[in-house]
Image (cartoon, rainbow, N blue to C red; front, side, top):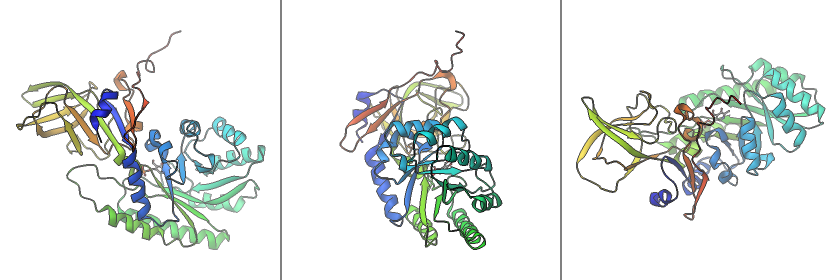
Length: 387
Ligand SMILES: Cc1ncc(COP(=O)(O)O)c(C=O)c1O
């Protein structure tokens, strides 16, 4: 990627999402899974790339009214939407069910959600396609007994129960995925034999991991082969793989500038114009680990120095990397942090200190640069309006 082209258009801090990378990543993931498997993009990872993925994924997992508005306004086909989420409020779901008869699927995450969807489907005479989310013991989904009861008691002409959704967490190891798939297989068998009910589909979020730091090694090829072979056990079922992190991470770059420097008895301190409000690396503890990055310098010196990189948040927690040895730094040098395509842009504590939200840029395959969000102030959001 030509960073200078981006910096001609926008200032730091900014995110750049490289669409070519994204497409290559999707092709890679698809090449690793059976071609019949659906890929479901979890929009929460990064809504800015959703439209770019429209031709590449079979579905979008949407977990809030806000995510629905984004996808709806982007023109994403309703039939590709899975309306999910632990909190489904009456007003939003009422709006969706009444306005649209073509939404792909709804998930049921509690008995109350079952009642809500049943009421609305009956009220508007809709036929809703349903995935029932099975809990892994946390606050999401229903228990095995509740799930079976919903299937047993579904005398409702308005529900087509397609199958089960299961997601227990992110950044999984293969052993955990193996245990989960074995568990799901057993549970599905028990439903089918006890209730004489066919589970047609399993939408499973494996929590595919991304290894963010320079000291890590990951044999992703073998890992994905293993996930594929585990999921291939479900012979007569439609399999949908939910993923956010693994799809989106590698397309993202975060550019942030050296804006102040000082030294004291504890070392060399470098202040960047971004910070942990914009940059979230899963598993980063005490800034001890070094993520993959490039360093853009107008004046490059061979001499090395060791620095700690801080963000601009006026909190001692805003440390990005500790004790980093790099070429001697100067004001205006720019760090490009990599693999930030998932969650950084949506999960950062972006309102803290009323700092601006960064520019967001899409870097298209043909080199075109589209600024899809200009930096936005947050002081208006944090402002108490007395009028
Ligand atoms: C239901 C569900 N599916 C999929 C995902 C995406 O997880 P990941 O980014 O680990 O792929 C999440 C993330 O929270 C989720 O809640």
